[in-house]
Length: 243
Ligand code: SF4
Figure (tube, rainbow, N blue to C red):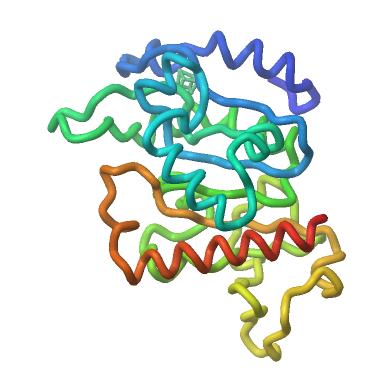
């Protein structure tokens, strides 16, 4: 693959991908992703579930209901979000049920690595101004595995234009932003508004969200629901900045 190809060519190649099967992993072949018409908004999940694999629509079932309930707090309705966003995943084919029978199998690091070149091609083409990472595997693109969700959810990472390359996942080059203020070490906290000089420099925001599947109990805890609401307030502010 070359970085210069367009969406249509990339998607034609991607739909034919069987790398994981060829390496001996069980997957339901047929990657799941969707491309909205808008520019600059991208969501990366973990992997599709069984119904997503059939209808080829990301976040089609229960996880999607919860995700879009959250995003409604940020001012998006589902149809608008789907029409605008590029939605994809760390691994794009359904990985099957877990051996324990509880939930779906988590794709191995090797499978994630097999799928990574597709993700990098997508990132280059979309070049997101706002990237939403949903679930642990996606969050680990940027955040160390040692960071807890309650340290991350409710904040965003802002990459200034000079380091806003879509493949830059070096957290040390980002400023950590919380709803309503910049929280940058050594700098005075400033309100985030559309008139903020930071907001007009066309960098890249990355906002992490927990996985919305019912298999995760984390979002059910009241203290974590507060963090999710903070994340939605932040997304609403970023949308305002980006208008
Ligand atoms: S998960 Fe990714 S790398 Fe594996 S077969 Fe599907 S598209 Fe290819």
